[in-house]
Image (cartoon, rainbow, N blue to C red; front, side, top):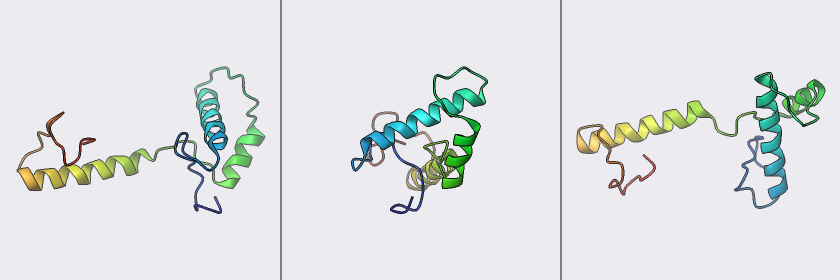
Length: 98
């Protein structure tokens, strides 16, 4: 958090400490299971959940609202350029992820 200003540790892209990324992924998985009432093999207690939340831990590694808005902006730019929203699945080289 001190280095990046947030606690969204990526699973695969944090080369400085890959085991931290994996641990965060494990915590997120356990938390999601707890939220669904499922049994988990982790020792993620309510106290530990609160501790992580106090630090600013993000239970979702992706901000889906932010990702959605980004895609909407990309789609608007596509429509402005081409006049429609029929984005080709394989042939749009300017933004293949769109």
